[in-house]
Length: 84
Figure 1 (tube, rainbow, N blue to C red):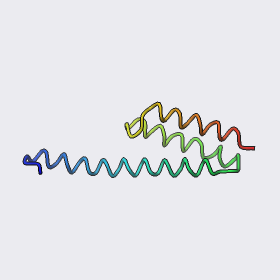
Figure 2: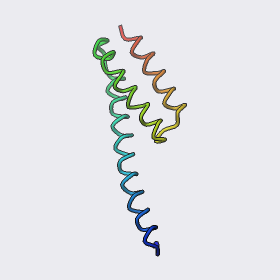
Figure 3: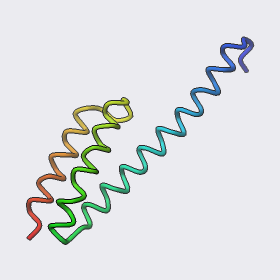
Figure 4: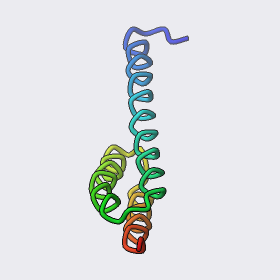
């Protein structure tokens, strides 16, 4: 266990940040899953900018790597374009 007051505070801060990051990551994954399951083209085109924005925010906060974010957005864009 930490001995210094600042170390105890850092532990508390890290726990809060970890929970927040997990929430953002899980929310984005759910949104991605819902977009991939979408069969209506107009609904998918409407959802895509929101999901793309969530992915960008994850990359900005270093929750996921920027290349992973780009790959996800690219694959989702292809998926939305391919819906008949």
